[in-house]
Image (cartoon, rainbow, N blue to C red; front, side):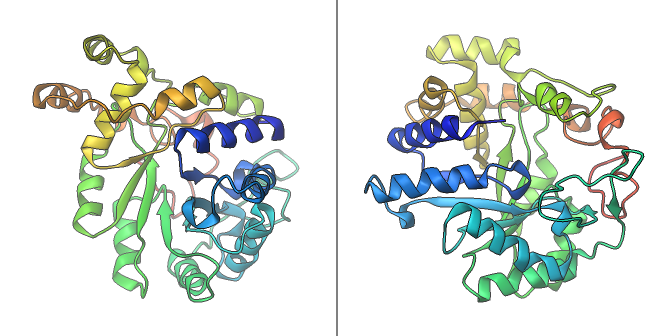
Length: 312
């Protein structure tokens, strides 16, 4: 949803504020703008490439072993980089590949073209080959459930180092996080603030929001009460809790003041009682916004896929 000019400002502001982790994806369609901005930043000597940690993702239209290298090379070209720090399989559901520009290919009736033949183990072997070739330093998963992660772990040569999934105070995924920690897989929480722009994003792309679950963690009374105590914003409390919970957080913003604000989470700690109070806000599957029950208007075209990862 960001213009190239906004991305320029965003990256410059973030790097000046101390951020070193950039999360993107082929499907976000902003890699080219990010690459152009990074090239300018590197050329000015503001920071070195090796000081940045850059993540991108294999799109659903690339979920075949023979397409992994093709799409990673395209991402590297877009980002103007020689290597990625972490390459993730964006989601275990595959779609038909109708070309680089059709991120969500549809048939003449407007239905998504799902590829039901997805084989995540074959895809993973192709991901491992990208590490061997030096195109990415490490590989991981996104939106995979526990059984899918276990299949990869049981059959891999290079284990996934990271899982990126939806995690916020209403969907804490405690069993999944525990499983990953036990198996040496770090966890990264997307939408840690509850994705305030989710509805706008989906509606702009023509998806019905009928039945969609929209939650507002930053408006939770318990969070606001703790924020008042520490003279912080609700976003600070949400991010600080997840950090103490043991997961990485990637709050999305193009607003320079919020970018600077969001990183200001290292000068306080939650008490044990506060941590437990926030832990108790978990709603389990009733807190899931991306996929799963309560979101039929968005996901019903994908949930017939054998690798659909969310509870139906």
